Amino acid sequence: MASDVVHVVDDDIDVRKSLGFLLATADFAVRLHESATAFLATEPKEIEGCIVTDVRMPGIDGIEFLRQLRARGHAVPVIVMTGHADVALAVQAMKEGAADFIEKPFDDEVLIEAIRSAVDNRNHAVATHPQAAEIRGNLSKLSERERQVLDGLVSGLPNKTIAYDLGISPRTVEIHRANVMSKMGAGSLSHLVRMALIADPKN
Image 1 (cartoon, rainbow, N blue to C red):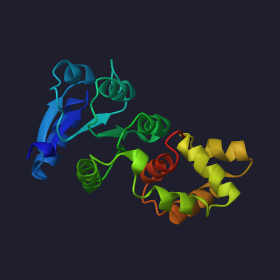
Image 2: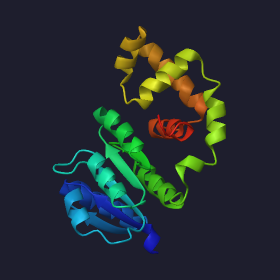
Image 3: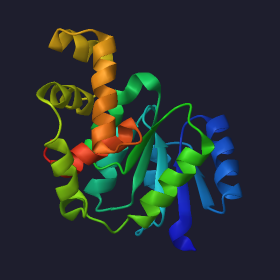
Image 4: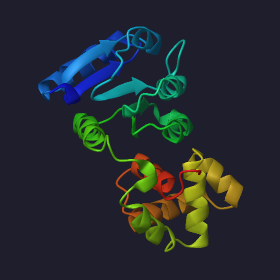
């Protein structure tokens, strides 16, 4: 099916090849692109399926890539791959409209599931997300401190910075973070950020 096309955009040839092999074995049709510039130069009028891109690339990076896709009117879901130190960039990517972000190194099944979810949810507008009311209800159950920690996470801040800003220890931030994930029903940081953005798209 054309809707199951996955465009892999990454400047690292080894990453492109390994992702291409992985996704082909999961029955996706795969197109490999060496850069966002190359992809945009050959873009079809209608982009099917979804895009998996690295956030850090020479030339047009993942954030600018998202902006250009949106500026050209493409509503294709984009999954951003990010290194552990690039969570702030990943959060920014989600604010620019990325469907998801995945921290490297990631389990193969996590990426495949994210792609399937992105393709399935392609037509769901965030503004009218069916879970928005439920998410806001869960947000209201957070303590003031948990909400402060969540705000820090959604801003892309690491635990140590949140701890410093709030005058508490990084370990305490980890405990609050775990409580927030539990109360919100989030399975990952990207899931948590996505829920926060659904509850308040202007966040």
